[in-house]
Image (cartoon, rainbow, N blue to C red):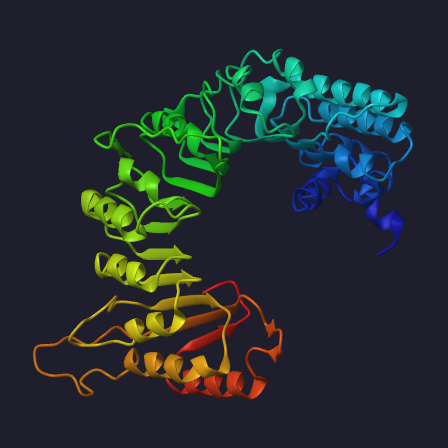
Length: 443
């Protein structure tokens, strides 16, 4: 089609075309933006400039510019583009990512910091339009955030800092207090934030510090509408003292559906009757794993559908699984020893374990010697109904999917598993109606 023909499109057709294009501006790398859409003719440019989907979602990764030691003038361009997006999206909500590197000394670093602050200042001036926001900031930027007075539209916030000191955060805990629609929150770590926790349906925390355990539990006691809580890791220094409340203190979370917690000890203080998915591991082996998990499951009386256990003993994993007979999906990552775990997963009518299992994911350093046990386990969970089953016993639900995720494909002496054994096992699974994925992170 010729350019002249395109220029004859009526405005409603051009708007329809633009409506199918989602392409947020990467302020730090603007060359990939479809600027050419505004260069066809005056009409196309007018519609392009006034189409909010091109301007109200953008990313500003100032660290991407900073680490390449580029000219300071590029920060000026980033500021100009930020102002352009703000102006052309006027009247519409704003969603953006802003990543600011740590402050450094030197004349060029100081000039760059000036631009950083100007960019943040522009965005803070539009805080009433914020809707989905990611902020990664240095301590020097916090005073600018104090200009925020209200966040009436904000629904999701990711908040990170380049400074890991807790007292830095504690000085600014009221910055985001007025955000009545905030429903999803992601933090680098927990602190005494003045959020309305009752509005949240999702909370993610990158690092749990055990000396802030009481602060987290206090926040969760207010988060009655929380549906998922995802914590990535724990950090514990030798000089830190864990701050947990008394053992009798239990926080009820009636709406929680999914929980991932990297320290089983937290479960001593939680109750989640609606829980469907649980992922738990213990970065610090304070006590037998099952002694924290099992009381939580019994207290919650929840009907789990998916269970993930990471880096615990096989005996602890088995004890936990006996408390969750209805799970349909199971993830075992580094549960040791593998031989014991496979023996327990091989279905035994005298000692049935997770008889409704449909999907299984195993992450280990596999060896060829594991395939016979894997095959035996598959055989026990894919028997046709009535095949060798005594009267009065219901058939085990057939396993449908198996994922094997090797921790290490190659050991010090060469490949841990041979291609021929993998293919032979794949054929065995196919013959039994089990879908096998290898080196795949999805069940």
